[in-house]
Image (cartoon, rainbow, N blue to C red; front, side, top):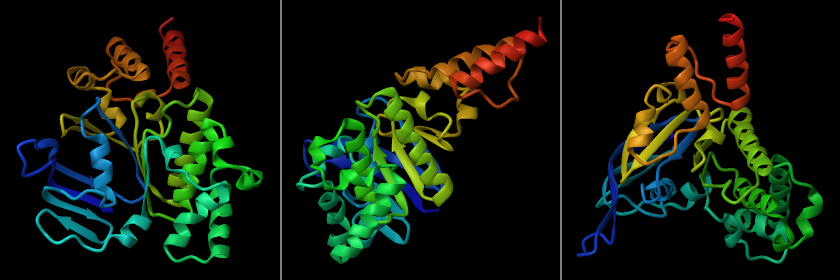
Length: 287
C-alpha cells in the first residue's frame, strides 16, 4: 500500500474550546497505480484528507502512512521534505499559486527547490509540459496570459516536474469548460495507466470521473461512508441521496435499466455513450 490510514482523526483548533472535527476514525488503504475518486458534500472533509497525504497537516489521532513515512498523532513529526516531493498536491485553484513572470520559471521553481540545477529543472519542465500536452511556445509566456485550461495544466506540470509517485488533486476541473475537463481527465488517466502514478482526485462531478476511477472514497461529516468501485455503488444509490449528493446520471439510468431488465450481475454503463448503446441493444432484444 502506498497510503494507509489507521483510525485517523483530525480536529482543527485541537485542544481548544473551538475544536472542530474534520475527519473521524478513518481507515483507508490505497494501492500503487490506482486512480481514486474522492467525493462528498461541502464540509465533508475532502480537502482535509488530501492535506494529510503530504504532511501539510498531521493527524490528531491515529496513524497516516504514506510511502515510507509514518505520521503518528502525538509523535515528533518526521522529516517531510522528500515526502512532499514524492506526493504532488495540486490545490483547488492552482493558478493562485503562480508567482513567477514566465511559465518556465514557475515550473522550474519546485525542482530547483529540491536540489536540481537550472538546466536540469528546465529539462524536467519540458518533460512535464510534454506529458500535459502543452506547446513549448508557452514556456516563455506569463502564466497570467494563459487560458483557464492552460493554467490548470501548467499548475499540474509544475508538480509533475518534481517527478512525484503520487499526484493529489483538489477539484482540478472546477470552472473549466466541458472540453477542457474531459481533456484534463484523459491526461490524468494516461499518467495513471501508462506511467503507473497513483492519482487521487477530489471532484464534485462524479459523472465525469466514473469511467476513469478504479475506486471511490465518499466522505460525509468527516467519516468514510463508501469505499469501493462504481459497479457496487450502482446498487447503493440511496447512499448518495441519504448524504445529500446528486446521483450521477449514468448510474441512475443504469439502476432503472437493471431493475427493469434484471441486469444486476452485469457491469454498469458509466458513460452516456455506453448507456445509449446498452439501451439500444436491450430495446432490440425485447422488440
